[in-house]
Image (cartoon, rainbow, N blue to C red):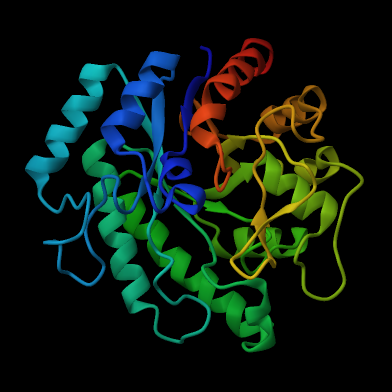
Length: 315
């Protein structure tokens, strides 16, 4: 069966779109028109989300704390003939590494796991929240144990809802070296836990060693990097890389830039066979990620055509 196509909705709500986000219905209508099979939900305002982390949903755009709201959204997506490939949980306001009390993080994850289950979403995305520089403040062993033990509990919560957990490693967050990635994955060691492999992040982490603290760990190409992750990948994002990072408000490297296909250096005819071989995906979606791209809305149509081409050959 051929892979289904989706794209991350956050491309139209954050970064260049933060001041004028595109509403979720408009996004879905456009994606349906372009032939997408689904959407990957950025579960934070203004798009549908489980609610305000502070508990006050009255002025929280997109909040859907009630089962009836979620059932209505699920039915509406079914009417469109579209599904959800996953959600990016809104956990960035929580503390993970820089505290010995992850109660609030776990509570917020629980809300997102239930939200995903109610909408029929197969997996919840997580990241390490704090930047790689946090290791200067918290010793490595302590930081590692906090991430591993917290995610173990999150995986148990997710399993109770029939949902997978996928960790998107990237330059902008801690544990962004290949050895870190293996160490965290081995430490969590849960059947519903895996790695989200974004081809842009794969280039920046595995080949460039972007924002790695201390001695860099790199490979000659993504192919060798992917080989070390064999059997661990449970979610795929496909997009190009120009070997650069997106810049934060101060002009400093933040995380990988996500240029549309053709504006970067990735040879997908080399990368995709390796990625397919190494992946164990519990659903049938491949997802485009245009996070932080200034013209994401305009670039979406061409990216869909390229993803279709890749699926025709490798999907």
